[in-house]
Image (cartoon, rainbow, N blue to C red; front, side, top):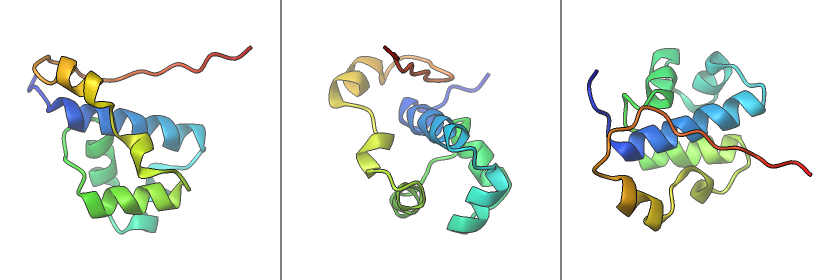
Length: 94
């Protein structure tokens, strides 16, 4: 398996999580921001880099702060030389 850049995997994983939690299809998101379904799928898998302007479009579409899609500098500095395929986050519900 080809190693993906950790930043692409992080952003893609978070995009996938936010999209699925919002119950938005890949097709709907792709049309809304002017990309293909394949591009969105590749971004979510970490295979394709997301341009900053498209990341802003995505953040606006989901009414999220763009920083929601970016890792902390601590996470990035500890992870940037590792091989990862997906980032999983968990919400704790009381």
